[in-house]
Image (spheres, protein in one colour):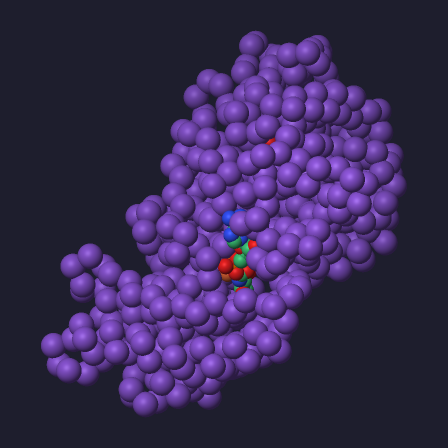
Length: 533
Ligand SMILES: C[C@@H](O)[C@H](NC(=O)OP(=O)(O)OC[C@H]1O[C@@H](n2cnc3c(N)ncnc32)[C@H](O)[C@@H]1O)C(=O)O
Ligand SMILES: Nc1ncnc2c1ncn2[C@@H]1O[C@H](COP(=O)(O)OP(=O)(O)OP(=O)(O)O)[C@@H](O)[C@H]1O
Ligand SMILES: [Fe+2]
């Protein structure tokens, strides 16, 4: 089968031929990038570039198709194109080009989600079955896992995409677009500086770091040092949430996607994290990480094989096309990112190792070699202190938590009373989830957020449903922070439950009974935020 793919969501006008029967599975790609003269990507200029460059790259791929066919014709079976997400003016040009080519060649049209393509190229090349995927691209940053016919968003940025955040900083210091490679280069000569580190469960945000980085530059801090601090902080956050996703789902395969994935330091951190926990890591070659039509053609071929083609009349583009909206027609229903976790003896959580000594649980935050040593020391200490303090304070606020028996901040170790029979993830019932809602309501009333309320951080099967793992918690009366806590919990349910809706309802009814209505109202706006800016 031979599929011609066309990409053009933002900056890369690209076409590719994927021939599934070629000996080496070869993928021929021709791309023409748009380079803004100044500033960032201008949608109108980018669209003008698409209008010029898409026909040229398509022609070049068609010529290649003719050259590599015995028939003297291109022998294309289907045309696949990026349907979204991306810049509307660019997508429209690509959509028009793809429709007319499919009609001229008289072959089916396949509409591909660009973010799912960033994921599937890594899955295809790695041969992994059901990995967690970290998409680190310009306009996006999220973790995806497949479950029940859809890719679930396990965690994502609450504001801008990771590449766009970096590019905004480099614009501030007067460097040309794209900024990512320049930050990578400059960081090599820099010394680490501290910047705000913001992770909430598997979600994260970049705006605070970026303001702090710009401020540091304006204050005369060495730009190479800031670049080093930026990379260590941002990529440390992405690696941490990726690890949390592996831990939450029980998966031992991670693939990387997106243009920021070309960064050596990010790849090094992810590889080190995976090695440390015995997981496998795969990062495609740079030409398949940055926007390219090869990934569109590869996913296009899978979709075409599954009969997932589009009538021309229904092939409109969608600038906000989310990966979790895509019906995944090319994978089996029985595949899933969520697998049973078999625990024998010690448990390796995302952050710590936990060992059981009688009815005592000893939690140690061991150093993470992927993190910069200064950042690592700071986080381990801060979180150990927060966890011990907030676990006790939560009890006083009427929330069931284990007793804290001993704390050793120097060694980042805490001893807790053993509670519950299993994690909520293993026995996910509406009743237990309702109790979690009530607990969070009480906690918020006491001015505390949990910070990482997932189905693995709740223990069930004992006298009470108990909350554990307060290491990311803090004191706050802000509605926004409280709503974020609820969002993190709901995402963890949606990531793994077969039928999340009744659980969500139970959770919110539990919260409503004691918590603040404003928080539930804010939750609705949090859910729709930070996507594709
Ligand atoms: C929707 C679509 O148009 C969009 N595409 C996109 O953002 O292009 P992509 O090729 O995946 O990523 C580009 C980003 O990748 C960054 N980048 C490129 N090389 C980098 C490097 N060595 N280190 C860090 N960032 C890098 C650039 O600065 C830029 O922000 C997306 O996938 O979100
Ligand atoms: N007090 C406790 N009683 C019983 N089991 C516990 C207790 N504390 C931790 N565990 C078990 O250990 C696992 C990991 O603990 P914890 O969540 O605190 O570690 P972590 O490394 O912070 O994990 P993550 O960041 O992945 O949530 C829990 O999911 C739970 O199964
Ligand atoms: Fe992309």
